[in-house]
Image: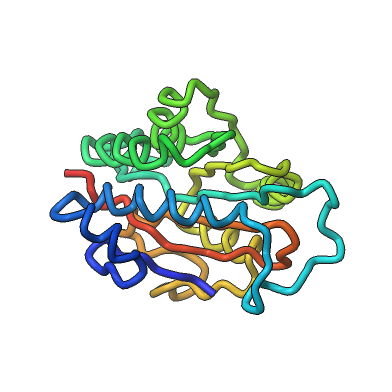
Length: 215
């Protein structure tokens, strides 16, 4: 199941939080959503609505794991290894601000300039390197993500035809919005998929946010 938290729709946010938001930007809403979601992902599952326990989950799990999966920001040209456009660089900066306090422990991008440049502002803000994972080695990336340690939050910047593969491989029950085939729409650079896996959950929960605060 995918929950889509659109910045202009506040039904998913507590009323007290809505009052604090006021007329803030979309980015502020997304940062609040992230804080709420990441804080609840580490709670012990103790209600009837919790996912069924995973018998293969490591006994040492106490915090759960999270993943943030995005497509690279807007491209400057149609060249195979194009850098970001001005708008793309603005979106990358917005992502860095949005995720600065999300507890990201690792930053991964493919070998292309557009994903590296999308990840760079966040990595710089966090003082972490951008680790490179080949775009044509999705299974290797998934194997790496599935082995992520307890308490980790991994950021992945990849491509329109890889984002759905990663999200649905990590959460097979996820139904992604407005996707025909296996790729995101060509003009869609805003989606931010937050995948949270509490301890004991077989299938992580998926929430869709947006980075559409870039000018």
